[in-house]
Image 1 (tube, one colour):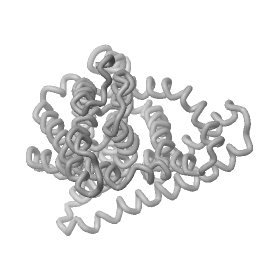
Image 2 (cartoon, rainbow, N blue to C red):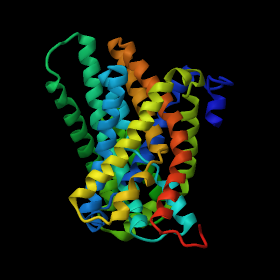
Image 3 (cartoon, rainbow, N blue to C red):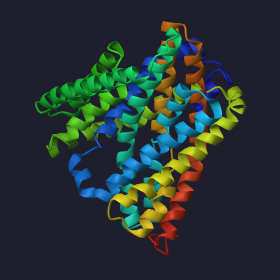
Image 4 (cartoon, rainbow, N blue to C red):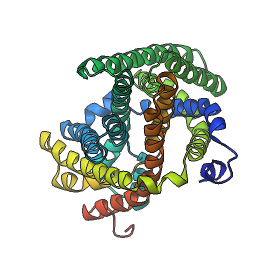
Length: 376
């Protein structure tokens, strides 16, 4: 909200040119967010979840992606726009879901499933976004060049981009772990952490890679190094600086929001909300068919994972910046229009999901009988 007040919609203290100049701060903040998500993707934890929950995570993410792509395309007949919106849909908001669980003191199989799904789906969401955004940009470049050939060759670009992002992040993560092993003081570890995120972010921008995937891979390498002491020494100082990073990130996100554009995007926002909700809920039902899952998990998990906030807003900011660069490079105003529409719509719909999401999570836990009487 403070960012909106500072932005062009109200005080104009942060106007469009200044927002462009400050975009590097957004990119650094997103690098830390991606690193944090990667540091939660432990392979050993994933193996303990069981085939049912793993299939639900994949089905819910891809369900949200494909349903939103189809729904937005039916409304707009704009494939790049539809793919970008679809790439936003899988991301969730773990903090809101976890807060409800802790407030209600919930316990049981649905509670465990909620923890698992919201803990891992953001990682998969980032991978889906990396592929979807690259493919959409390839389609826009193809549109700018006036090519009418098959779209299949454009699939190669996103695959190469994602592969190089993961390799770059893996190398930086390996070097980061080696350096941190030689350090003892939290201050020194924090300096190396900043250096790793800045290096991963800078190389991603320089080489036109996904900065979110690259930084996520750095965190992924750390958490799967299987050195518990090393992981604790890095995550402890990280937890101290993340509130400041989120403050900067959300303020700049708000400054990019144009309130005047919200009414014109009403139908698009409604389609996104309905499509994402249907995809998530339907995906849980579909995924539960591929492994042993309790009936109450199958029935109520879908409505418990609808919250959406920080990661989706971050992805929409990345999309806006990348599409603006595409416009500048190829003289493609359509790309900038898509970026602005995505950022405004996602920021607005996240408000809806952050209001209704926790309410539905509590409802699901109550219907599953996992909230103690004194907490309800």
